[in-house]
Length: 380
Ligand code: SF4
Image (tube, rainbow, N blue to C red; front, side):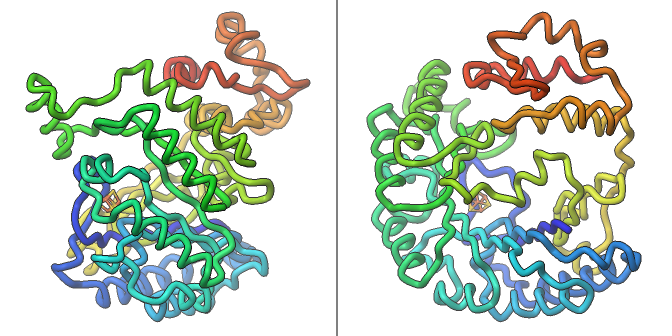
């Protein structure tokens, strides 16, 4: 079984963020852990004996800033889970954390989380350039981020992932290269690199609209952003990383099993407020309101995922992976003849953008910047 747990608390809201976030200063963390434990009882308590036979393979605690909860809070959560299901001996258990020496965004010493059971940490670094961090309204500095990661390593964390961002206002190819260089030098195991997206109704959205005419918030041009993506791939590859998904690279043996389950279109249980799950053929989202969630942790919306949607997801998520999709397995799962059904798309893109490796279909690396358009053609 694969499990996601959402922790909504953050010290402040970043300018570009459109996640469901609750500011830590308003309190409620202890009561939230109580509600999560109640949800675990309700959801795991409802599993059939057959489902209870499969241990937890991965748990990903994302947010928000999950490191704002202390290790005892997670011990309680893990105990609540283990009343129903054990963790597999090699389970991947990830904590998202933000570097923050000034604002103490880790509630406990790093080794305490290892002792509680975590074995992987994903750190929201975003950039090793102080001006870019300011433009993103992140609270940490470059120096603090590097010290935070060295502190994790000294405490014994051996599976560290960094989140990096490109396409940040004022970012140049030179500053992006410096961020990549520092990432490689730190000797971490995994990197997720994402282009900054201006999401609707975020403060960043308003700021870019307001300041576009003044030029004081200059976003890099589209072709520069594409060049930054390829620069990221090349530099990280030279540093020993392999790309296993559009935006994710890992040293050999460190690809995230939790995220691979998403791209394999696998089912997973989601817990916590504003969490998205895919379970027993249904997609569900728990309620996006902390008070409602505390009253009823099962509140939210559920919709069945019909076979056509499952097929589309299997193709669209599967082509995000560097290894691509095994077409015979897809055909037997969905009872389709892939070439007959999608011949018009294959004829358009085969060779340059869609490539065959035997019976496996992959999206070529040069197709990635165009992938939204290509993948959308697989939608019914
Ligand atoms: S730390 Fe992450 S979740 Fe929290 S506000 Fe910033 S981007 Fe959003």
